[in-house]
Image (cartoon, rainbow, N blue to C red):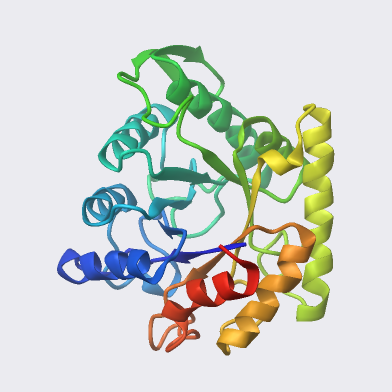
Length: 296
């Protein structure tokens, strides 16, 4: 069981550089950031770009894995994203993971002037986006003519430091998304209930995630793939659970999900006065607490 941090890109770099170093020094497995152009109640305040933030974070850390949690097609194109990811992998000396999801209807859904896509269109685009990103990051020269995305002799040289490419962590709960995770992912991400607003009683949530894990196992079986080949990531902060009430609460929480097969838990770095306020005072203790409870 590993614990990772989610650091919102709200800090000017003179402050942010210390926050990313803090995550490494505390012993977090990885530190991710959101790849949005604005987000929720933070949209009227400082919010910086994910790729430049991760590039800067790579320069002030040495061990910490870095990544997006998550990138979506809402404003990304596979060709330009692949070039950015390949470069991040080089700058970080092979410490990048790309978290990727289908996107939603808020925040970035209409930022480029388009009408928000329906759930069906988001899923359809995602099913084209992920395989093309996989090809771009694996091959040196890619040509693709699809319904939503095209690439013509897209060069990705010298390629990724990590071979055969940077790992993809696919956020999914439905059958089509789980099939993408099984086919292309090195990790799978869940936040709990499938839809925003479906938050339920804490005691019911392990059963929901167990059902998602069963769906992932079936998707892997259809691909003749062992589900143990994928890391299983739980991004916290979107349900009624309160794992950050105390260090012991977090250890107990981690134990419940470790028993189901979750092997990485991501917690938000606390920001006072926001929905991510919980965790003040215990955030930096979490990696050592998990190591004591579960071993290195």
